[in-house]
Length: 307
Length: 220
Ligand code: HEM
Image (cartoon, rainbow over all chains, first blue to last red):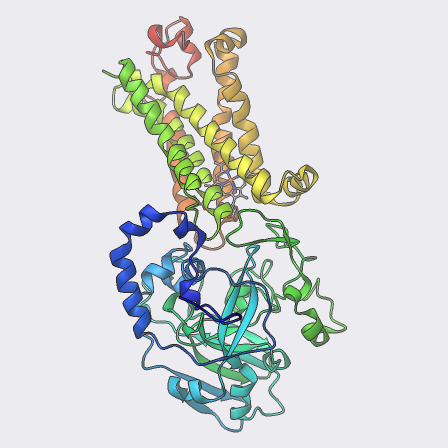
């Protein structure tokens, strides 16, 4: 297909290395690929404009981002969610915003999609497990949603809660962490323009395993702070609980800002793997490289203690 | 039947199959989004499996009345060491990029790495002294004593696994249970080899293996 210079190639047309090195397997998978292509035609493609907050680094192949997930509700192995979340029911869906706000409200998915213009934000995404990817997310700043509810001056934090249904998520019970998954941000963090309320990636709706239909993306924090499949947002006065902090407070702090100088007790955070590279040779940047924008949020704080 | 050479060759091939499968996946660059994690976990899994299989030989030859199973114990142990080496090499190359000071820091600082390293250090001398020559040189009693380290290695391997998982402890707990079971079986009279009359021949070099004489003694 001829393309004008500078025109964006749809992500689905970029083939991951493992596939083009694997013609034979690819041919064997042709029937499945055909079905996949049909599904793609059916999936809504978002009209977005590319946000200036985007990095120019090349995005990770979509196939990897959709088949390498930490989403313990659907199993603890990285390839579990792609398989087990396939039938996850994400419609109808609504998100409540309440607590210390003047306008507590429930937003349907339709309302959320129309609340602000959708942008494409290409962010680095750094997992606490010392790997990273680059993902073109679709969404808008979380602040746009929070402002609709008009936070009360007393509100200092935002508490988030994921959807949890043991019937649809039978593996959750065996994962060793408590559900529903909860997490939180300080209100000023949540209102930062980089904090993204995300409804899609690679120009399409979020697949279930990546947190459909609506999730958070906080690119300067470790990935587990970017809570998936959100149903509740509550503004509160005191620091809200976070699932991984409850599970192991020595290893996972409330802030969990990406920080090459504070090791996880079990591994160094100084370096990371930029997937799919097999080498842990990529230097981790303070605040995942978003320090210019967010360091001010933490001035005067001892980030070694408040990790 | 257990004594046939083709069977031994077949079992050898089966033990090598995981490594061959891994080689095939590497050749095809089909290593998931995270090759380091994939290879580390794959080789770690096979190390601990072979450790448990090795530990199972002695109790099983008694329980199943198949004394000739002893023919395979050394092979299983050496495969455990082989997969441990692949596992360690993956860590040293892909994770640490041969930064030895960084590795030493890791070993000192992180209990799960300390335990893994201890597990490796414990089986290395067993692999080195697995030949008939070494059994002779050390003498059966001392050789047997030394080779009890395999239990320490397996226990350290389990601790390593238990400490490295984030929250889902089912598998490390299962391996812990299996190692404890194998050890317990060794201590039960009638299953533990030393409860049976021991032949004075060199076969006694195999701890608790009254029947492991003759054919396997030479090991060469
Ligand atoms: C006999 C020795 C060893 C055994 C039995 C063993 C076993 C294992 C097992 C079962 C796993 C987890 C696999 C999974 O989750 O599927 C693992 C992971 C790992 N092992 Fe070992 N291991 C041994 C030695 C070592 C050594 C010597 C090192 C490095 C010095 C090491 C470093 C690691 C690392 C870095 C991981 C991955 C941790 C993670 O994913 O967070 N292991 N090992």
